Image (tube, rainbow, N blue to C red; front, side):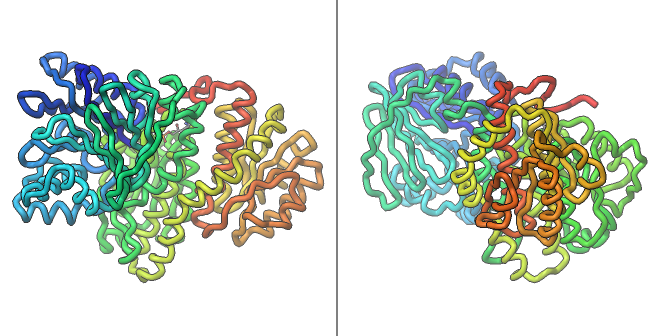
Length: 611
Ligand code: AGP
């Protein structure tokens, strides 16, 4: 995710842009930049790292104007450095673009524009937009029309704000996926990624819809649909305060991030899975079939929630690669003198890319000659810099300490990687294409699940929030989800909870079962479904309170369980992406009921950079 803001009006624009970017910094903060248009022309100032670096750069300049735009970056294509920081420009320097999202077809567009003589200066997908608009203006098309025409050639997701130094006072904004909102002021108008930066100037907000674009100047805002027809839309009156606005109206970042998972999963597979050709492609990770065939074993190293994702990854990769795959806690791995050589692939899984235990394990593996791959959410983080290849989970910044969207995008990354391995091992494109199709519809199933089940789960939380202990049970690919559900509950509600393989319960934990022990079980249709049913009957026989996450319409389970939470059907390898969501919501609403500090639970840190 990135933060975008554009302003036209009477105010000194630099403080407006910087103030707005501060309120958007939670959306991304690996680099930032602004563009200001004044009598002298277009000034673009960018800086690597946090916004404070851009501010100190601007402090030394006398940059003024009342028209411009700004951007905080969460890199997806191209390292987080000053050169790749937005805004990006065309060859003339007059057409200036800022962007949030992923332009899937930027490579073919870039090649075509380079062949036409355009010189590119960055590694980003965004720069293509500036040159595409320039190319159209070179053939006589006016700026706004050139923008409309260029947008029609883009594939993927984008929120774009574009200005032209030769036409000061006009901002064009386009939305297809990531959010864009417009603030209607008195003799000023402002566009941004969300409401937070607008509230200082106006509470009259228009939300752009997908496929729409807007043309703003100081006096008016016009909105057009995909057929270029003028759209009339009454502004909404927003009563949030600025802090609520950063959470887009959600009470906590954690709940907002739970609801971002459909978008986050989609952003993780977009531009990497091509259904027509049945091919998987990674920007930052390439193996040849021959290189892959040299690996005899895989070790996956991670901590906490990422370790649970690694356990799911083991299932997916072992099925695809048919070589032994071991999963280790980072804090254990390097002290067990692991058997590692040049035929070992080690995968580090880490949202932050800075977890000391995971990095230490990866360093030990590298020292012993292993090839290193990282699944990570932060471009340029320590884990990514030491790796031979990286699969980025494009979840956007995860602010809540309890990891949610990072987890489901890690599962998505593992699924993509398993398809990639199947491709390297020569599996038929048709089989891989079938597996892709189910992933493509997962975002819709996430949204459907949230819509249908959230209220019910909140009610369940109100019934069970006083419980002192919980047991989470799952088998096979859902055993890691039982562990994850228990961790989520523990870390934000401070209730003791344990996750166990369902088949293991009779070897001890069953002694805990009584009418005061809620048991949360995952029992979707997998080859071991009947076994799980037997385990759940053992729980019922001891008066345990049974909450079961099952397939929609599982009438038998509705009879057996005290409560069911139904999830949409999907193929077994993708079920964990759906079955984890009820456990996230249950933990959230129980913690909410208990008045816990959900986004910053006691004793925890978002990134544990000490051993
Ligand atoms: C999970 O909710 C916790 N925040 C914690 O277990 C976390 O997953 C762990 O510290 C690993 O962090 P990383 O993914 O950034 O390496």
